[in-house]
Length: 88
Image (cartoon, rainbow, N blue to C red; front, side):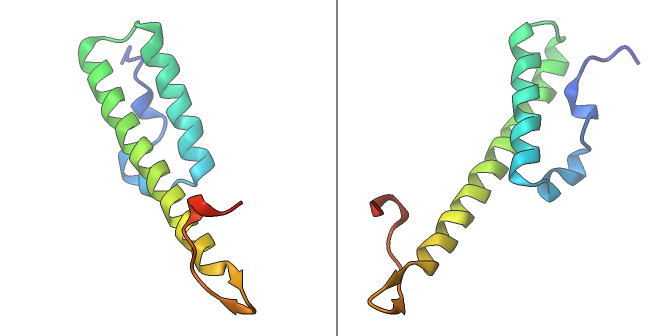
């Protein structure tokens, strides 16, 4: 009951349903808790695991957004793909 673990804040099953902003906010909270160094080893490991899941989720959402942007770039009056990183 006296757990200071952040994994209780958002259920593991709902991680994939979070928006990018929600996942990033939760990830920032997790980092703050880990940096304080006040968690037990078991709580730290569980919290770190959840943080990794959130980081992967954020990365996947960014990659998906980049793909959408690539598909929406208009070139010579037609929609064409262009790598995201090469846009100016």
